[in-house]
Length: 322
Image (spheres, rainbow, N blue to C red):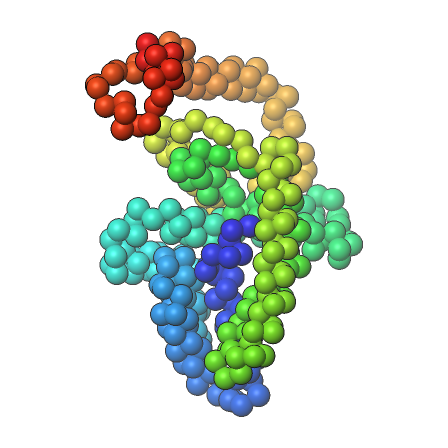
């Protein structure tokens, strides 16, 4: 939910959409419109403080606009890799910014997995309801983004949530009005402060509603599960497995899809179920042996003659200094 308030690709998309709607009434040239939007993106980066997530979105969208002006097809993977290099060239310390990794990981996860998950579900269950499809679209966008950022969140924050899709569904209808009102109040406030302040009241209502939803979702079961910090090799192994799956589905997309839809995996499991069980048992056992946590943790308090600096009372210190 913090992604709604953090300056990222969603905010940049609304900027481009709003500018494009305005320019369609005054400018006919596509190239001129794209150059104006490039200027707006540069201005947006400046006024928002040039956060890594905002830079990532603006550079990627800027490359898309430039490719349209030169009649070239935009390659997503080239664009995201080039953007990553540009951010590191601008500030090498961006490499250690968690926000940058979450932004890149979430974007890459949506591109790699969202379309396949949606297509798989529609083919498997043959869903025709538009409402259900819209519901699943929101869920799969959130789920696809989580696939690549979960290890980062565990490593940096030691938490994982299984209720993220609930909060995303609840705020799905708030995002558009909230961002639109924010931009309108900002623009009108420069020329008509009273009108901008009036619109800001409605904007404040939506933000308070967002915080209220966050407070409710934080009390749901499994909304915040604390986990141990994984070893670095475990994170590398996770991404290697994900990369292998992506490579398999990219190279043999249709065969794998038919294999899943045709329940071929069930026949394969029946044939090799003993080897699968033995392999899974060994895998789990290895993790258990490596991540054994000692149970003999002790805390020693040493009196160095400066307990008065900590405002401890004599009774408290006499009771606990041993």
